[in-house]
Image (cartoon, rainbow, N blue to C red; front, side):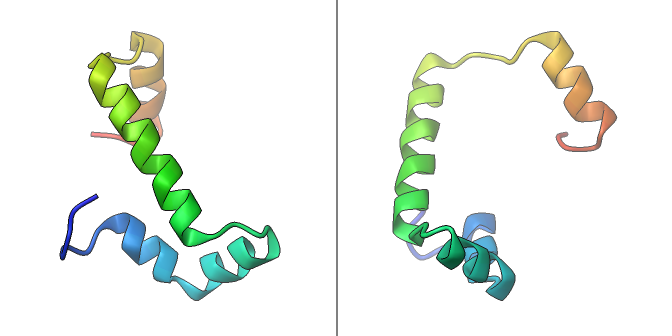
Length: 65
């Protein structure tokens, strides 16, 4: 992600409750970060816009801008 800049992912991974759940599920923070970065690169390369029904559902639940 970005070097030297705190991200929302950093905030989430720093949360004690998230850490407990990840430990229980045997998920390592560096593995999760690598997976998310890989998916971000893959989706950015496609430069696709989600279907209208996905955007509408997202906005209806205040999950996106």
